[in-house]
Length: 385
View 1: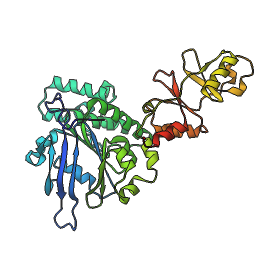
View 2: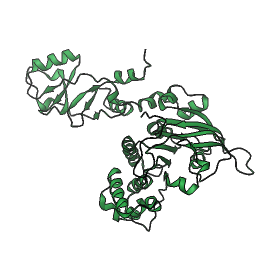
View 3: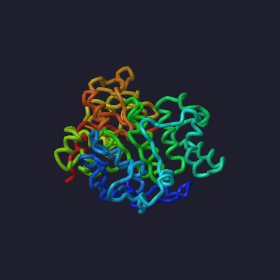
């Protein structure tokens, strides 16, 4: 996601929908501490991008995030939100312009979901009609039915509560969101689903986001830019995910990112980013000679077979073409298919799981889009030129 480093159009709150954020030589030292919690931290987040702070426990990533909304005050340096120092703002007013999502979610258990979402609009003096419209809009945006607004947090699943937490943070359409390990308490299956949903949501809302995690895989998946921090609150490297994986700044970063950097880079690309193998396929009832000729043109020993709607139904080994028309009884069912938005890393896993056979890729409507092979995925890892 690319964004200009300027505030974007105003939203319903009157704030810009996204604003740039900049740390300038920021330091934080607690009285009596032997070393700084944050030391000379400098980086800039363009408007509309996700910046992930990642590092080992005790590196100061959460402290750095809390300096932004003045839950903690800095000792030295400055933090600029949309070009204005946060130190020059009253903390209460500043926080109303910043969405905040935490791992524990922090919903008020005695309030309905609608009342929870309305927290900041109420503080800002919005009227009931405007607030109600915003609640309905946000519930739809995060994929929850409107009737959910009348329920209480205890009646929702963990994933649903996390969606409400995101909706509440977005209620006043703030230019900046702070997210402190928002998916850390969710089970792995739902965590991946919520991550994907949030990335889809971000493509619509285009907020500036500071996202804290200890998980480098989550950082690579979620971030437009990643700030890797080391102990003592120092910045080890600030880069895009691809830059970080391709050229770690030093041994600490390389070790933290992991030895499987090449595989992690596959997470950054989707099947839609590469040219698929020709998707020509056989149909049930096709003449055997025509099917064999198709296999010869594709230089393959098996064909994908599709139904009348061009939806793949399986594979046909060419050796089974014994002069008879293509028969469904000779077709082997597919182990798996992928869509264009599937990451190359997930595609690689599916290829290997199916004995390194080319993976069938389908469009959103299920029609055959093409094939992807182990060689194509390997080529994607090679530097250009």
